[in-house]
Amino acid sequence: MPVRRSSDKRWRYREYVQIADGTTVRISGSAPKHDNTRTATQKALLEHVERVLYPGRGPQPKEVPTYEEWFHGRFWSEWVVGRKNKPTEQRSKKIIYDCHLKDAFGSLPLDEIRVTEIAQFRAALVARGLSDKRINNILAVLSKSLKYAVDAEVIERSPKIGLFKVERPEIVAWDFDQYARLLTAARSEGNDWYASVALAGEAGLRVGEVKALRWREDVDLIAKTLTVNQQTRNGETTTPKGRTRRTVPMTSTLVDAIRRLEVVREGLVVRNDDGTSKSDGQADAAMQRICRRAGLPVRYWHTLRHAFGTHAALFGVNPWRLQAWMGHKRIDETMLYIHVAEAHARDLPERVREAGNEEPDPDRRVMRMLSERSHLRPKTDESRSVGKILPKLRVASDQTAAVSVS
Image (cartoon, rainbow, N blue to C red):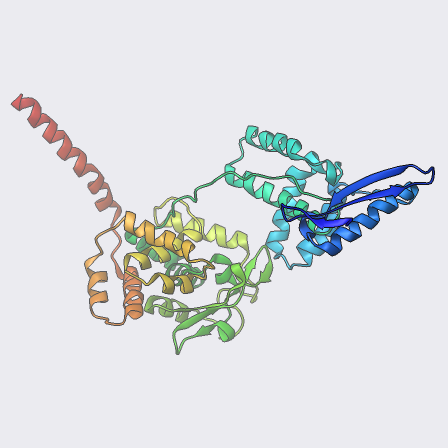
Protein backbone atom coordinates (compact mmCIF):
# COMPACT_ATOMS: atom_id res chain seq x y z
CA MET A 1 0.00 0.00 0.00
CA PRO A 2 1.44 3.37 -0.97
CA VAL A 3 -0.16 5.02 2.12
CA ARG A 4 0.14 3.51 5.56
CA ARG A 5 0.29 4.44 9.22
CA SER A 6 3.68 3.87 10.85
CA SER A 7 4.45 2.82 14.40
CA ASP A 8 4.85 6.43 15.54
CA LYS A 9 1.20 7.11 14.54
CA ARG A 10 2.21 9.27 11.56
CA TRP A 11 0.65 8.71 8.15
CA ARG A 12 3.34 8.16 5.49
CA TYR A 13 3.50 7.27 1.80
CA ARG A 14 5.97 5.36 -0.37
CA GLU A 15 5.65 4.81 -4.13
CA TYR A 16 7.63 4.12 -7.30
CA VAL A 17 7.17 6.45 -10.26
CA GLN A 18 8.39 5.84 -13.81
CA ILE A 19 9.43 9.05 -15.53
CA ALA A 20 9.59 9.81 -19.26
CA ASP A 21 13.05 8.33 -19.88
CA GLY A 22 11.94 5.01 -18.37
CA THR A 23 13.77 5.48 -15.11
CA THR A 24 11.96 4.43 -11.97
CA VAL A 25 12.13 6.83 -9.05
CA ARG A 26 11.19 5.96 -5.51
CA ILE A 27 9.40 8.72 -3.57
CA SER A 28 8.33 8.85 0.07
CA GLY A 29 7.05 11.31 2.58
CA SER A 30 4.50 11.93 5.32
CA ALA A 31 1.40 13.89 6.08
CA PRO A 32 1.81 17.43 7.40
CA LYS A 33 2.11 17.61 11.18
CA HIS A 34 -0.92 19.85 11.48
CA ASP A 35 -3.07 17.46 9.38
CA ASN A 36 -1.96 13.91 10.16
CA THR A 37 -4.74 12.09 8.29
CA ARG A 38 -4.95 9.47 5.52
CA THR A 39 -6.64 11.91 3.18
CA ALA A 40 -3.94 14.55 3.65
CA THR A 41 -1.24 11.92 3.06
CA GLN A 42 -2.87 10.77 -0.18
CA LYS A 43 -3.01 14.37 -1.33
CA ALA A 44 0.67 14.84 -0.47
CA LEU A 45 1.49 11.68 -2.47
CA LEU A 46 -0.32 12.94 -5.56
CA GLU A 47 1.44 16.31 -5.34
CA HIS A 48 4.80 14.57 -5.02
CA VAL A 49 4.10 12.37 -8.06
CA GLU A 50 3.15 15.44 -10.09
CA ARG A 51 6.36 17.23 -9.10
CA VAL A 52 8.42 14.20 -10.26
CA LEU A 53 6.56 13.73 -13.57
CA TYR A 54 6.17 17.42 -14.40
CA PRO A 55 8.94 19.38 -12.65
CA GLY A 56 8.07 22.60 -14.50
CA ARG A 57 4.54 22.64 -13.13
CA GLY A 58 5.55 23.08 -9.49
CA PRO A 59 4.13 25.98 -7.52
CA GLN A 60 6.00 29.22 -7.98
CA PRO A 61 7.57 30.66 -4.85
CA LYS A 62 5.45 33.34 -3.21
CA GLU A 63 6.72 36.88 -3.11
CA VAL A 64 7.23 37.76 0.53
CA PRO A 65 6.60 41.42 1.49
CA THR A 66 9.05 43.46 3.49
CA TYR A 67 8.28 44.08 7.13
CA GLU A 68 7.36 47.70 6.39
CA GLU A 69 4.92 46.67 3.63
CA TRP A 70 3.40 44.03 5.89
CA PHE A 71 3.15 46.25 9.00
CA HIS A 72 1.46 49.18 7.23
CA GLY A 73 -0.52 46.90 4.91
CA ARG A 74 -2.38 43.76 5.88
CA PHE A 75 -1.26 43.66 9.52
CA TRP A 76 -2.51 47.17 10.15
CA SER A 77 -5.80 46.86 8.29
CA GLU A 78 -6.67 43.27 9.26
CA TRP A 79 -5.23 43.02 12.78
CA VAL A 80 -4.98 46.51 14.27
CA VAL A 81 -8.03 48.11 12.65
CA GLY A 82 -9.96 44.89 12.03
CA ARG A 83 -9.74 43.89 15.70
CA LYS A 84 -10.73 47.36 16.84
CA ASN A 85 -7.58 48.33 18.70
CA LYS A 86 -8.26 51.48 20.69
CA PRO A 87 -6.79 54.77 19.44
CA THR A 88 -4.28 54.72 22.32
CA GLU A 89 -3.17 51.20 21.30
CA GLN A 90 -2.84 52.22 17.65
CA ARG A 91 -0.83 55.27 18.62
CA SER A 92 1.48 53.14 20.78
CA LYS A 93 2.11 50.67 17.92
CA LYS A 94 2.90 53.50 15.49
CA ILE A 95 5.40 55.02 17.92
CA ILE A 96 7.08 51.66 18.51
CA TYR A 97 7.37 51.03 14.78
CA ASP A 98 8.71 54.49 13.93
CA CYS A 99 11.17 54.64 16.84
CA HIS A 100 12.44 51.05 16.95
CA LEU A 101 11.19 48.54 14.38
CA LYS A 102 11.49 50.59 11.19
CA ASP A 103 15.27 50.92 11.13
CA ALA A 104 15.90 47.35 12.31
CA PHE A 105 13.43 45.38 10.16
CA GLY A 106 11.59 47.74 7.79
CA SER A 107 13.51 46.78 4.62
CA LEU A 108 13.82 43.03 5.43
CA PRO A 109 11.49 40.47 3.83
CA LEU A 110 9.43 38.71 6.49
CA ASP A 111 11.10 35.34 5.91
CA GLU A 112 14.53 36.87 6.55
CA ILE A 113 13.65 37.95 10.09
CA ARG A 114 15.14 35.12 12.09
CA VAL A 115 16.22 34.43 15.65
CA THR A 116 19.67 35.89 15.04
CA GLU A 117 18.31 39.23 13.81
CA ILE A 118 15.92 39.43 16.76
CA ALA A 119 18.68 38.61 19.25
CA GLN A 120 20.85 41.37 17.80
CA PHE A 121 17.90 43.78 17.95
CA ARG A 122 17.23 42.92 21.60
CA ALA A 123 20.91 43.41 22.47
CA ALA A 124 20.83 46.85 20.81
CA LEU A 125 17.78 47.85 22.90
CA VAL A 126 19.54 46.74 26.07
CA ALA A 127 22.65 48.71 25.10
CA ARG A 128 20.49 51.84 24.73
CA GLY A 129 19.48 51.52 28.37
CA LEU A 130 15.78 50.81 27.81
CA SER A 131 13.92 49.18 30.70
CA ASP A 132 12.94 45.52 30.50
CA LYS A 133 9.25 46.47 30.42
CA ARG A 134 9.79 48.84 27.49
CA ILE A 135 11.79 46.22 25.60
CA ASN A 136 9.02 43.68 26.18
CA ASN A 137 6.44 46.10 24.77
CA ILE A 138 8.52 46.57 21.62
CA LEU A 139 9.11 42.84 21.15
CA ALA A 140 5.40 42.12 21.73
CA VAL A 141 4.44 44.30 18.74
CA LEU A 142 7.07 42.56 16.60
CA SER A 143 5.84 39.14 17.75
CA LYS A 144 2.17 39.88 17.01
CA SER A 145 2.92 41.13 13.51
CA LEU A 146 5.04 38.07 12.63
CA LYS A 147 2.62 35.56 14.15
CA TYR A 148 -0.24 37.04 12.16
CA ALA A 149 1.89 36.63 9.01
CA VAL A 150 2.05 32.91 9.83
CA ASP A 151 -1.72 32.76 10.42
CA ALA A 152 -2.28 34.52 7.08
CA GLU A 153 0.04 31.96 5.39
CA VAL A 154 2.44 34.65 4.21
CA ILE A 155 5.38 32.89 5.90
CA GLU A 156 5.65 29.34 7.18
CA ARG A 157 6.90 30.00 10.68
CA SER A 158 7.65 32.82 13.07
CA PRO A 159 10.96 33.03 14.96
CA LYS A 160 10.78 32.52 18.69
CA ILE A 161 10.82 35.83 20.56
CA GLY A 162 11.66 35.56 24.24
CA LEU A 163 10.52 38.28 26.63
CA PHE A 164 12.22 39.33 29.84
CA LYS A 165 10.64 38.28 33.10
CA VAL A 166 9.57 41.52 34.74
CA GLU A 167 8.19 41.84 38.25
CA ARG A 168 5.41 44.37 38.56
CA PRO A 169 6.55 47.35 40.63
CA GLU A 170 4.98 47.79 44.03
CA ILE A 171 1.95 50.04 44.09
CA VAL A 172 2.66 53.62 45.18
CA ALA A 173 -0.26 55.28 46.98
CA TRP A 174 -0.91 58.31 49.16
CA ASP A 175 -1.27 57.62 52.88
CA PHE A 176 -4.21 58.94 54.94
CA ASP A 177 -2.55 62.24 55.89
CA GLN A 178 -1.33 62.91 52.37
CA TYR A 179 -4.74 62.16 50.90
CA ALA A 180 -6.44 64.56 53.33
CA ARG A 181 -3.93 67.26 52.37
CA LEU A 182 -4.60 66.67 48.66
CA LEU A 183 -8.34 67.08 49.12
CA THR A 184 -7.79 70.32 51.07
CA ALA A 185 -5.50 71.62 48.34
CA ALA A 186 -7.93 70.57 45.59
CA ARG A 187 -10.70 72.68 47.15
CA SER A 188 -8.53 75.74 46.59
CA GLU A 189 -8.18 74.84 42.90
CA GLY A 190 -11.92 75.05 42.34
CA ASN A 191 -14.94 72.78 42.53
CA ASP A 192 -14.21 71.03 39.22
CA TRP A 193 -10.76 69.84 40.28
CA TYR A 194 -11.97 69.05 43.80
CA ALA A 195 -14.64 66.80 42.25
CA SER A 196 -12.02 65.26 39.97
CA VAL A 197 -9.73 64.38 42.89
CA ALA A 198 -12.70 62.95 44.78
CA LEU A 199 -13.75 60.84 41.78
CA ALA A 200 -10.26 59.35 41.57
CA GLY A 201 -9.61 58.99 45.31
CA GLU A 202 -13.13 58.13 46.54
CA ALA A 203 -14.24 55.90 43.64
CA GLY A 204 -11.01 54.76 41.98
CA LEU A 205 -11.72 56.28 38.56
CA ARG A 206 -8.89 56.66 36.09
CA VAL A 207 -8.27 60.20 34.88
CA GLY A 208 -9.67 59.38 31.43
CA GLU A 209 -12.83 58.05 33.08
CA VAL A 210 -13.14 61.21 35.18
CA LYS A 211 -12.99 63.40 32.07
CA ALA A 212 -15.62 61.31 30.24
CA LEU A 213 -18.14 61.01 33.09
CA ARG A 214 -21.61 62.33 32.11
CA TRP A 215 -24.41 63.59 34.32
CA ARG A 216 -27.48 61.95 32.89
CA GLU A 217 -26.01 58.65 31.69
CA ASP A 218 -23.46 57.91 34.44
CA VAL A 219 -24.36 59.68 37.72
CA ASP A 220 -27.21 58.58 39.98
CA LEU A 221 -27.38 60.93 42.97
CA ILE A 222 -30.44 59.14 44.36
CA ALA A 223 -28.86 55.69 44.44
CA LYS A 224 -25.45 57.33 45.06
CA THR A 225 -23.68 55.31 42.36
CA LEU A 226 -21.47 56.01 39.36
CA THR A 227 -21.47 53.96 36.16
CA VAL A 228 -18.22 54.07 34.22
CA ASN A 229 -19.15 53.68 30.56
CA GLN A 230 -16.32 55.42 28.71
CA GLN A 231 -12.98 57.21 28.96
CA THR A 232 -11.28 60.08 27.13
CA ARG A 233 -7.56 59.88 26.35
CA ASN A 234 -5.57 61.91 23.81
CA GLY A 235 -8.78 63.59 22.72
CA GLU A 236 -10.45 60.24 21.83
CA THR A 237 -13.47 58.89 23.72
CA THR A 238 -13.62 55.09 23.85
CA THR A 239 -14.72 52.30 26.16
CA PRO A 240 -12.91 52.02 29.52
CA LYS A 241 -9.69 50.06 29.85
CA GLY A 242 -10.50 46.37 29.51
CA ARG A 243 -13.76 47.32 27.71
CA THR A 244 -15.63 46.62 30.95
CA ARG A 245 -18.46 48.81 32.20
CA ARG A 246 -18.71 48.98 36.00
CA THR A 247 -20.83 50.59 38.71
CA VAL A 248 -19.18 52.08 41.79
CA PRO A 249 -20.94 53.29 44.98
CA MET A 250 -20.26 56.87 46.01
CA THR A 251 -19.01 57.93 49.41
CA SER A 252 -20.65 60.88 51.17
CA THR A 253 -17.52 62.92 50.46
CA LEU A 254 -17.83 62.26 46.74
CA VAL A 255 -21.56 63.08 46.72
CA ASP A 256 -20.80 66.39 48.43
CA ALA A 257 -18.02 67.17 45.95
CA ILE A 258 -20.28 66.50 42.96
CA ARG A 259 -23.11 68.60 44.38
CA ARG A 260 -20.72 71.54 44.69
CA LEU A 261 -20.48 71.75 40.91
CA GLU A 262 -22.36 74.76 39.60
CA VAL A 263 -23.45 73.32 36.26
CA VAL A 264 -26.65 72.23 34.62
CA ARG A 265 -27.07 68.47 35.07
CA GLU A 266 -26.38 67.77 31.41
CA GLY A 267 -23.25 66.83 29.48
CA LEU A 268 -19.92 66.14 31.16
CA VAL A 269 -19.54 66.32 34.92
CA VAL A 270 -16.03 67.79 34.82
CA ARG A 271 -15.65 70.13 31.87
CA ASN A 272 -14.46 73.48 30.57
CA ASP A 273 -16.67 76.55 30.57
CA ASP A 274 -17.72 75.87 26.98
CA GLY A 275 -18.78 72.31 27.84
CA THR A 276 -15.80 70.56 26.27
CA SER A 277 -13.77 67.88 27.99
CA LYS A 278 -10.68 68.74 30.00
CA SER A 279 -7.51 67.94 28.06
CA ASP A 280 -4.71 65.67 29.25
CA GLY A 281 -2.48 68.71 29.64
CA GLN A 282 -5.05 70.55 31.78
CA ALA A 283 -5.45 67.52 34.05
CA ASP A 284 -1.70 67.03 34.51
CA ALA A 285 -1.09 70.71 35.17
CA ALA A 286 -3.89 70.81 37.74
CA MET A 287 -2.46 67.79 39.59
CA GLN A 288 0.97 69.43 39.65
CA ARG A 289 -0.53 72.54 41.26
CA ILE A 290 -2.53 70.50 43.79
CA CYS A 291 0.51 68.47 44.87
CA ARG A 292 2.66 71.57 45.27
CA ARG A 293 -0.09 73.38 47.18
CA ALA A 294 -0.34 70.35 49.50
CA GLY A 295 3.44 70.31 50.02
CA LEU A 296 3.78 66.86 48.46
CA PRO A 297 5.97 65.43 45.69
CA VAL A 298 4.29 65.64 42.29
CA ARG A 299 2.53 62.40 41.47
CA TYR A 300 -0.25 62.15 38.96
CA TRP A 301 -3.84 60.95 38.92
CA HIS A 302 -3.25 57.22 39.02
CA THR A 303 -1.74 57.50 42.51
CA LEU A 304 -5.19 58.60 43.72
CA ARG A 305 -6.69 55.44 42.20
CA HIS A 306 -3.99 53.44 44.01
CA ALA A 307 -4.92 55.21 47.25
CA PHE A 308 -8.56 54.18 46.81
CA GLY A 309 -7.66 50.53 46.22
CA THR A 310 -5.02 50.32 48.95
CA HIS A 311 -7.14 52.06 51.60
CA ALA A 312 -10.15 49.90 50.77
CA ALA A 313 -7.93 46.84 51.23
CA LEU A 314 -6.72 48.19 54.60
CA PHE A 315 -10.36 48.56 55.61
CA GLY A 316 -11.00 44.87 54.90
CA VAL A 317 -12.90 45.03 51.60
CA ASN A 318 -13.86 41.77 49.92
CA PRO A 319 -11.31 41.31 47.07
CA TRP A 320 -14.01 40.32 44.58
CA ARG A 321 -15.97 43.45 45.44
CA LEU A 322 -12.86 45.60 45.02
CA GLN A 323 -12.23 43.94 41.65
CA ALA A 324 -15.70 45.00 40.50
CA TRP A 325 -15.28 48.56 41.78
CA MET A 326 -11.91 49.03 40.11
CA GLY A 327 -12.82 47.30 36.84
CA HIS A 328 -10.01 44.75 36.82
CA LYS A 329 -10.24 41.89 34.33
CA ARG A 330 -8.30 39.47 36.56
CA ILE A 331 -8.41 38.99 40.32
CA ASP A 332 -4.59 38.85 40.49
CA GLU A 333 -4.53 42.56 39.58
CA THR A 334 -6.78 43.30 42.54
CA MET A 335 -4.75 41.10 44.87
CA LEU A 336 -1.77 43.43 44.40
CA TYR A 337 -3.64 45.96 46.54
CA ILE A 338 -4.44 43.32 49.13
CA HIS A 339 -0.79 42.26 49.32
CA VAL A 340 0.39 45.88 49.68
CA ALA A 341 -2.12 46.46 52.49
CA GLU A 342 -0.92 43.31 54.27
CA ALA A 343 2.77 44.14 53.83
CA HIS A 344 2.34 47.75 55.00
CA ALA A 345 -0.36 47.41 57.64
CA ARG A 346 -1.08 50.62 59.57
CA ASP A 347 -3.10 51.47 62.65
CA LEU A 348 -6.31 53.07 61.42
CA PRO A 349 -7.13 56.58 62.60
CA GLU A 350 -9.61 56.48 65.47
CA ARG A 351 -12.23 58.43 63.54
CA VAL A 352 -12.04 56.01 60.60
CA ARG A 353 -12.17 52.96 62.87
CA GLU A 354 -15.21 54.28 64.77
CA ALA A 355 -17.04 54.97 61.48
CA GLY A 356 -16.52 51.34 60.49
CA ASN A 357 -17.75 50.02 63.83
CA GLU A 358 -21.07 51.82 63.40
CA GLU A 359 -21.98 50.04 60.13
CA PRO A 360 -22.76 46.28 60.07
CA ASP A 361 -23.00 45.92 56.26
CA PRO A 362 -19.51 45.05 54.90
CA ASP A 363 -19.65 47.17 51.73
CA ARG A 364 -21.23 50.17 53.41
CA ARG A 365 -18.72 49.92 56.23
CA VAL A 366 -15.84 50.20 53.76
CA MET A 367 -17.50 53.15 52.00
CA ARG A 368 -18.03 54.98 55.31
CA MET A 369 -14.42 54.43 56.30
CA LEU A 370 -13.25 55.69 52.91
CA SER A 371 -15.37 58.80 53.30
CA GLU A 372 -14.00 59.55 56.77
CA ARG A 373 -10.52 60.02 55.31
CA SER A 374 -11.55 63.42 54.00
CA HIS A 375 -12.47 64.56 57.54
CA LEU A 376 -9.05 63.72 58.98
CA ARG A 377 -7.21 66.83 60.03
CA PRO A 378 -4.01 67.10 57.97
CA LYS A 379 -0.84 67.57 59.96
CA THR A 380 0.51 71.09 59.81
CA ASP A 381 3.96 71.87 58.47
CA GLU A 382 5.07 72.73 62.00
CA SER A 383 3.96 69.39 63.46
CA ARG A 384 5.56 67.50 60.57
CA SER A 385 8.89 69.28 61.09
CA VAL A 386 8.78 68.69 64.85
CA GLY A 387 8.03 65.03 64.25
CA LYS A 388 11.16 64.75 62.11
CA ILE A 389 13.37 66.53 64.69
CA LEU A 390 12.23 64.80 67.88
CA PRO A 391 13.45 61.29 66.98
CA LYS A 392 16.89 62.69 66.16
CA LEU A 393 16.99 64.48 69.52
CA ARG A 394 16.04 61.30 71.35
CA VAL A 395 18.74 59.32 69.56
CA ALA A 396 21.32 61.98 70.31
CA SER A 397 20.40 62.04 74.02
CA ASP A 398 20.58 58.25 74.21
CA GLN A 399 24.04 58.27 72.65
CA THR A 400 25.21 60.98 75.10
CA ALA A 401 23.94 58.91 78.03
CA ALA A 402 25.76 55.85 76.74
CA VAL A 403 29.01 57.77 76.50
CA SER A 404 28.70 59.14 80.04
CA VAL A 405 27.99 55.69 81.45
CA SER A 406 30.95 54.12 79.72
